[in-house]
Length: 377
Image (tube, rainbow, N blue to C red; front, top):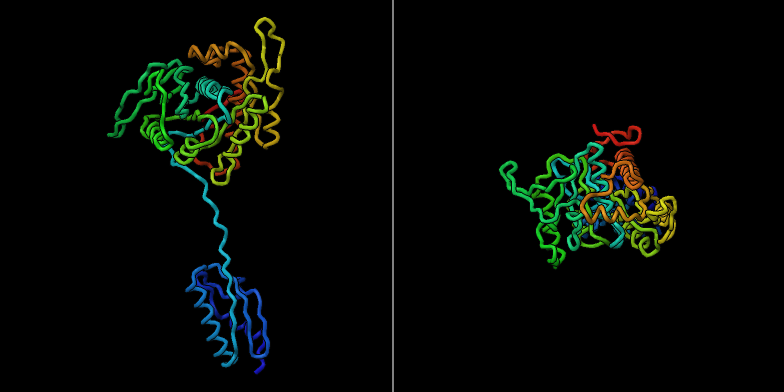
């Protein structure tokens, strides 16, 4: 009996791939046929990894060739399983009703002014006419209550839709919740990761935030449990990374950018802010002294392919404003307030661009940048 490759292939065209509905040839499962007299060797690659599926294919091939070509043919079927690579799903959270955009403010290391940037961006957004909130997620070093002149405040309980919720404290048009509201100033927060994450979830989901255009999340320094808890709990629209110009801070900021860009997280980095860019003495306001290096964060943005949002100089009034609970952005038409306003506009513009090019996690109530200021619908 003369067995041909063509005859064998025609038989295989009548056999389906388990679980796929296509035949062994058109599906691409058939890789090779070799015929040596009355011996037939068939190489297959299947996507179905089960032993039952492989055995079923081998038996059907054997029966079909014996019935249709030659009853005494010796059949060898080599089956390899090629499972598609398992793509890890991005970590996503559940949206909060009424909140349009959630932005994480992050830093690779402590002491670079992340909370200062958070409060000033929040106040600037509020001045632009947006509804804004801050979640102080820096569990172990909450400083937002001090910077927003809220020390000693305690959130009240309100009833929303029959449920008891925390009402954020509001000042300067910004709603705030912080673990600092529930601890004494001299009390250290000594919590393990799961306990800290549980406290954060309560502040996120058991709070009466109301309608917000922006919820800014002041993250702890570095990358760790709290960061993962936040991206798992909430659909973050974007992240802003704050750094100072020196190499030590930039190295950590680069890690922070990499964290948000991981395949399992995929939070768009809206940009990098450089704080303490240069020192301006009060007596010599025209002079700039680059104490920590020059344009370090700007170069980091170029290297990592993320936008550079702007720079904030090292000025005594910024520190004093934070210590006294009156953010520097409230000082109308000063060099600092103008710098912060520009950073805020750039961040909003990047958020608009992000929503044009990426699937939205939540509709964003920003439509355009009119002149030099963001406008809402």
